[in-house]
Image (tube, rainbow, N blue to C red):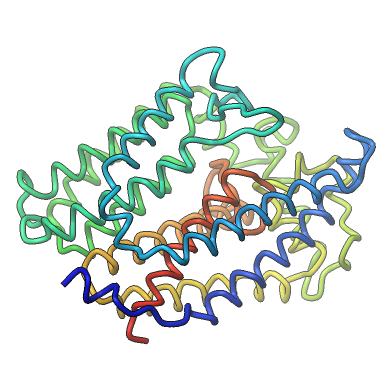
Length: 370
């Protein structure tokens, strides 16, 4: 049966491919527009971030097309070595002298002039492995002992290692993506309620254990209480979105990128987009992400086997959850978590791994009965 499924490949989903390229184009334009002031001040080169972003995009697109040509069943065969490698990287990044610290988190490993973020690899690696596990153990998923608990143990081991960095934003995306897969696989609602109760207690302990997390919560509830410190980032984000209005102040004409909003090309790039392109521009970008979710879900539901369905749904869930969290932070709906906006934010390993994930999704589309 395995051979029959992968005997004939169709053309990839060109609609999904078009959506991805549209988002990458918007991302390149906005990375330059949001960063050229800071890049010129810091590096004497206003194109510094754009050139690196185009390099990452080129590498990511090449990887996407390469992976798109690999039958997705291949990942089923190598799921365990991939997962073990991801765990190895998460342990490696914690070793002093190997892991690089940025913004208070030791989340990167330096490779020459560039760096990789192992937690990004873990998100995809865990989705691949969990898809394999659920495809072969779905009949046990309603059993807490035989199906649900082994999955949880794996997910929260990865989450625990990510929290040692610490990187709460990436950890939340990983956990929520995996919970979506367990729900789709048919896990009992009562198990999720029990997990939610434990999760709330654990989340409170995480907040209490680190003062900066408490500051983020208080800044979210009332950022104007401490506008120069804990509330500074979200206030500047709202100051960017407010003047944008319906049509925006014009591409390239943002005020907040002039050293008001810290490193606007990263997590808060949507704020600059909203300022320059307005409500209409922001709505178009959100619409593109909505189309990505719709198309990815169609591909998943039309996949020829359970592994393909779980794999595609896991990737779509990961991307969608990350988009929802990032935009919610920018508009002040939830506390700052420090995660990028897929395809738009400046970044190396994040953008490359995202495009690799899309490459897998595109390959699933080559066997889906759309």
